[in-house]
Amino acid sequence: MSNIEQTLSIIKPDAVERNLSENIKNIFTKNDLKIKENKKIHITKDEAAEFYKVHQSKPFYNDLCAYLSSGPIIVMILEGENAVLVNRKLMGATNPLDAEENTIRKLYGISIDKNSVHGSDSIDNAKKEIEFFFKN
Ligand code: CDP
Ligand code: MG
Image (cartoon, rainbow, N blue to C red; front, side):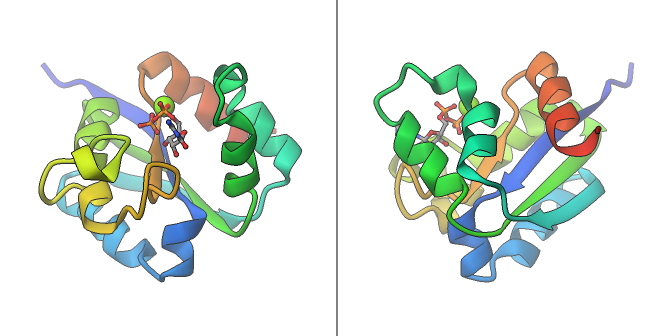
């Protein structure tokens, strides 16, 4: 049975800045994730704080929000079979040092904070995150 899902992907400032967007998009499309929406934006720290509010109690929250708003990002809706999980697998572990070979974070991540991509971690969060960036 088919299980087509949508998930939110963000190419973070460190990767946009190093012109890695096309390489990263190619990894998605080669793995059967279609890019349904795609826009380059520069969000404010307040918007980043809203987006990442699930992490507000974490020690890294302030730096994380400052970072995501530090430069242009590319936000995308990815669609495909089991898209949420497939995207998380393609991204690799949060810390690039722990990420498997050929994952985006292993290939391109600089550090646990500058780890090149964000991806929704559940169907529920994917819906909320898509709404956050693509519905007014
Ligand atoms: O992005 P992912 O879902 O893999 O990780 P998370 O646990 O939801 O954390 C969100 C983001 O916070 C990560 O992608 C990192 O950029 C950042 N983070 C950090 O800077 N330091 C940590 N110790 C953990 C996460
Ligand atoms: Mg997460």
